Image (cartoon, rainbow, N blue to C red; front, side, top):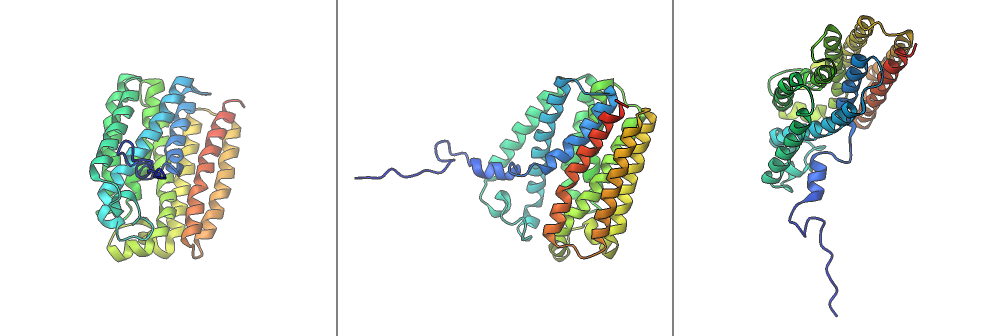
Length: 297
C-alpha cells in the first residue's frame, strides 16, 4: 500500500511561500510598528484628536506594505554582505533559498499595492510618495558611503509623517517638520542600538555603522539622538498648543531613555541590544497616547 507523500507548502503552486514570508520578516513586525507609529503621531497632531478611520486603515496598510518592500530592497542590495554575517547568512536571498525573480515579483506587487493606496489620498501625497520609495531604495547602499547610515533610515521612516500630515491638511506646516526630525533622530538612536548585534561582523567586512562610528561613546551618540527627538517632539506639541498630559508622557519617555543610555555605558551583548531595540515600540505607543491625552486636557 502506497502512503501519500507530504508536500511542502509551496509544492502545489511552485511558490516558496515560507521563504517569501521570511523575506518580508512576517514573523517580526517591529519595523512595521516603528514606521507606522510616527505616521499615527502626525495624523493625531494634524486632526487634533482621533484620526478618521479611512486614514488609519490606509496608513496601517501602507506601513506594512512599504516596510515589507523596504526589507526586500535591503536584502537585494546586501546579499554579498549578508552571506558573511552570522545573523543574516540564512536569509532567503543570502542563502540562495529564494530565486531572485520571486523577490523582484513580490517587491513589484508590494509597491503596486502601496501606490494604489496613495491614489485614495489627496494630490500632494501623490507627489510626495516617490520620495518615500527613493529614500527606501537609497538606505541599503548608504552603509557603503556614510559612517552613520542610520541617518538615511531616519529620513526614510520620517517621511511617513510628512505624507500623513499632507493627507490631513493638504499642505505642510511647521509642526510636521518637527515630527519628521524627531522620527529621524529616533531612528538613528534605535537603529544604532540594533547595529550592536552586527558590530564585529560589520568591522570585519568593512560595512559602515553608527555602532562602529561611536565606538565606546555609543551612549553619547544614542543619548544625543534621543535628546533631539524629545526636543523636536516638544516643539511640535508647543506649536500645536497641546495640553499638559503630552509633556508628562514625554517626561516618562525621557526617563526610559536615560535607563537605556545607562545600559549602553556598559558592554551590551546582541540579545540585550535586540531587546532594547524592540522596546522602542512602546516608546512610540507612549508618545501616541500622550498626543491623544494632550488633546483631551
